[in-house]
Image (spheres, rainbow, N blue to C red):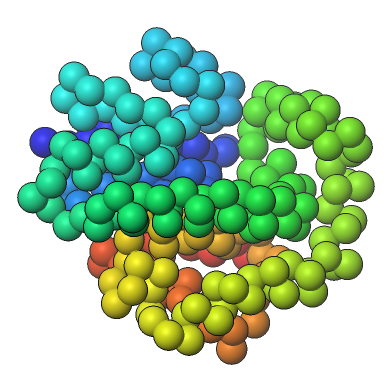
Length: 230
């Protein structure tokens, strides 16, 4: 059965950029399941599946509708236990929750700072107006003021990745010898940056950048099907 994924896009429906949607996309691929995507813009999200969620991703699998990337991963492991696991048990679920919190508190804020004007530029006129109003209300300043801090914050951002960098000296993936959902959580954040902005977050020599390249190669190069911003 094909899983339907509502995937966040901007003006170009072939460039899905949401970190959370990428988590779900990689999780579905990890399970070896077929996927069909519905390109969905910010202003269309409230109409998805009758307004089931204020955010995407949302999936439909037959009669089952699931919102939220972590809930989607949990559902996939429960619904398809015979296929490769995303968590390797309760301990893996707990580890992934920690990684999720770390990523959203450490990586997401800086990616937002670095890419916010590029994300704005990806939208059509109506969605760009929504994006600007929503984000400027959230940050209490203009988008141009937010992005102005990215150069000053780059060094601290790279330093903040040291726990991941150090761990990858022991193993090729966060999940060990092969990826788990924890890998897709961090991958989603960096893929968001890669697709949205040409701003260089990592040096090629960084082991985190090398791990990210390995993730891009997973599932027949799924992550590379959307080109990096240029």
